[in-house]
Length: 122
Image (cartoon, rainbow, N blue to C red; front, side, top):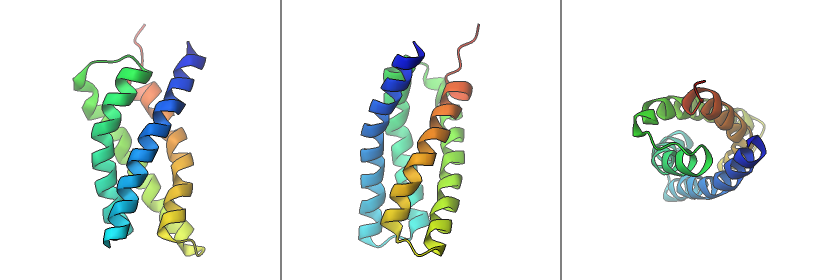
């Protein structure tokens, strides 16, 4: 089950990442600061991701979990902002820094979702 769950997480994560990064890149293109672009992309992404991750990865249909999901993405958002800021310090632009940040964010997101949001009670 874990292998299948992780594979589903990766596949759904690709969809969610394309969606979320597209929103981030659109806001950067429009002229938003990277913090504001990340904030709006995160909020819009949370609503999209809650449905896809909950239903397709963890087979969860409990909408009350959205509060935990928001907390997880708050943590992921803060980590992402700090990581983008650090990458900008070494000379990367907003687009590349945001793209690189996707990978550690994905790992953090999976672990927090699996063990905090969608944990199975025995």
